[in-house]
Length: 295
Length: 257
Figure 1 (cartoon, helix red, strand yellow):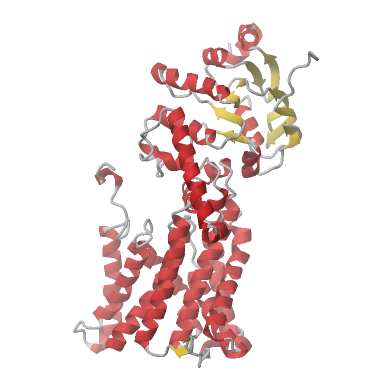
Figure 2 (tube, each protein chain N blue to C red):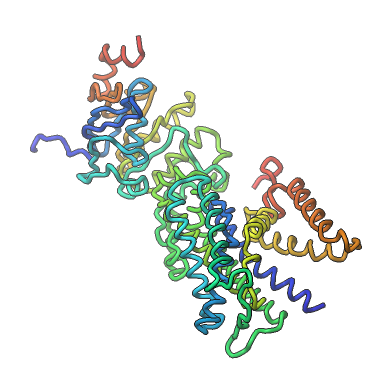
């Protein structure tokens, strides 16, 4: 049972990093990305390959994963964020599709559908993290680091500029803000953090294959952000705790085995719709302005 | 005394810009003198806002040149033009409505260290000091514009005349010498006009140069030191407001009689 809870907490830590980093784009910059699972996958594959083929271990793998993730994001962001508006949604969708195709088809490197087994466990100062409950601390430490980075970014002049760009890009330009540059920078930071989560995942599960990084995963990460509330830093964390807990709880429902899987899917989907009907601004979202008490 | 006029702070020469077959701005030339208020007037569709958009880099030009203190600024992007010292308001204000009044003005203040992600993490002390300076400056600016004590309200919750003041306050905070005001008095009634008009005058007392678009002829005469009359994208006349407003031919064009 402790191993079960520990596994849940590790996955919460990893998804919290993904949701927090995606919220830098969705919530704070008004840029909707559908490529976060691809970035997550790039991090996982880069880290795994560096560990397996170059023997650089977890730390070297994570560092290179973050760099490759940021680079992949920059390649898409530099041409597409020059154009304002929803263009990036399409471009990021393209990135998601291409990256997944590479994972599946560049078999010499990625081993295709069969995936990459035998990824080494992290070694922290000579201590190999191979127990789930030990990994909880590692995941929590990186989630905390991500939270700190997002906190610093959003509660600063930089964060003010992000919000200004989100709310009125033209006004931001007129006030001397280099809108394109700021958007590219935030896309790279978001991706570096998302790739870091991929690295944590790869060295935790020790086996990766393309199915963990498909489009539905991108949408899942976005729903963590939106359900938790994209206006607050803690929103995505709450969303992560909740959305990862619901499927686990549904396992305890007395459903006949033959229909269990589809029933769980149906209940899960219905709950999502109910959440969005009851609190469209997200669980931690601000109460609608009309009801807000005077500040 | 050489007798020559002071050299212009901004000089527009032979500016042309077409949209499809329509020449919105056509061989437009005028000077803006430092420390003065220049009024850009003309009937609807004369090209006034297009001139603003070209000066501030939001629109390209087909021909011409715009010199700011002897430096060509045509072809630069909006943020580059701002950094060289030309700021503007918009007809539809474009405030950040869901941000506070103070944040709106802070965005006008220069905070290069806090906007740079490297210094944000590596030079925390410098960032903190810069932010403190910016906040102090923003409070001063709010005070100048009569918005002290309103800093923590959302910009969208201000009354319209106050939103107009805020749109001027945030560009004033940028410390740029040239301020372009797009219809600072539009949509205001008598009472609030009496708040805005002296404010525009005070900009000059603070060392600013103002170029403004205005429809209200009376206001132009009251406010401007120089007037440039634009019609079909061309400068028809330029001079003292009294000469322009008294010219029957121009009045006819303006009022379309």
